[in-house]
Image (cartoon, rainbow, N blue to C red; front, side):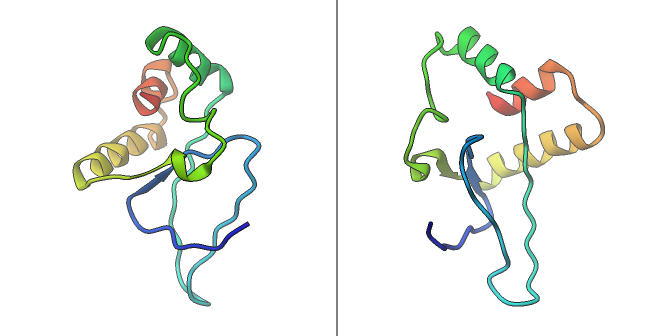
Length: 100
């Protein structure tokens, strides 16, 4: 593996078979991240309906091609969706909004 900094606003799509870990950059430092995990079926349904079943994102072996720096507006949208999920929104629409 490799050690590297994950800066605020970085979106990383981790696959079920990825091996990864996180720690603070400094001893005693703080790390905050949000892990959205969905059943494979939810992603497959989304691909089938909106992407013609094409294998995208998670099919990519190179993890760096599954990473994006979010601008402040996109980061706020992600935070809003995270608040919805934290408040108990577990319906298909909420999951699809996040995955789309």
